[in-house]
Image (cartoon, rainbow, N blue to C red; front, side, top):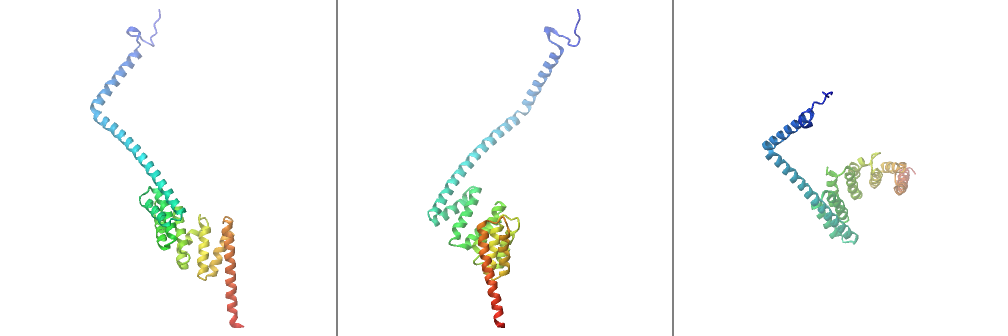
Length: 242
């Protein structure tokens, strides 16, 4: 009878490969036991830290969710106070959220508080908007929105130079608030009697196909005032020669 030498058999029908595998498994068990005996304190400690960290994260997430829900409810209550014309109560509620609310609601509350305060104290509202514009935690688009809101409150009191410094960067060709910024710059120049620059800003609004229709119509009306002012200047200049 032939014998298969490629799979030598040991006792009980076990092959050499079975024997080698059993020895290897036993060696691994011995190594695992040795490692466990040597490092079991560290292993248990690491496992405990993982459990505690996971539990802490879950607790933090839960508390954050509760805080956001509470702030959301508080914010809605403040908005309702504003709708009901309870300005002082709404202002106080928004300021409270701005001081102690989570970051998102705190930022929104700062904007709303500035809007409420602006009706009675524009200078104080400008300070809040300026703080938002300078806050690196605020999204750049919202920073520019704060700059524009501040300029809107100042357009009737600030001089043309100050308005230009504040608003002209917002009037760049690709700036998201360029249309409103150009309108403010045009109004500021018109108020200062600078008809040339006023006309230039209003012309830019009309020439921009992306400008809202309502804003373009207002700019066209302002250009009529600019043209009227120029005609008055020309007539005034011709009078002495008559």
